[in-house]
Image (tube, rainbow, N blue to C red):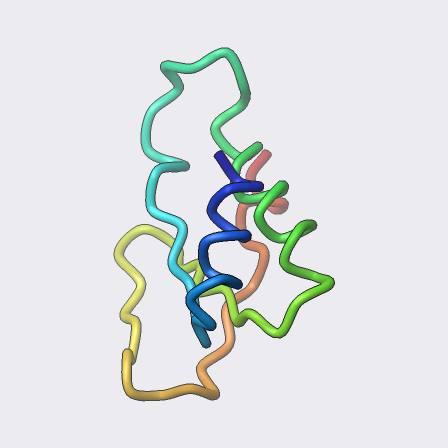
Amino acid sequence: MPEEFIQSATDIKAKRIIPVHNSKFSICNHTWYDPLDKISELAANTDLNIITPKIGEIVELKNNSQQFTAWWKEVK
């Protein structure tokens, strides 16, 4: 659940987070992009850096300045 994910990341003082259970299959009672929307909204009030690559996009784990777009908003 997005709320618990953000709380857990905050509790352990995470610097970056990667939401992974989203955007692959439409097998839930919510839209495929809903978790990304909720995580982004909840994290907006934190210092967490959310890593949200497009499927197949390269993530440079040692690059703290790598930026990701809200790509799912373009394909809804």
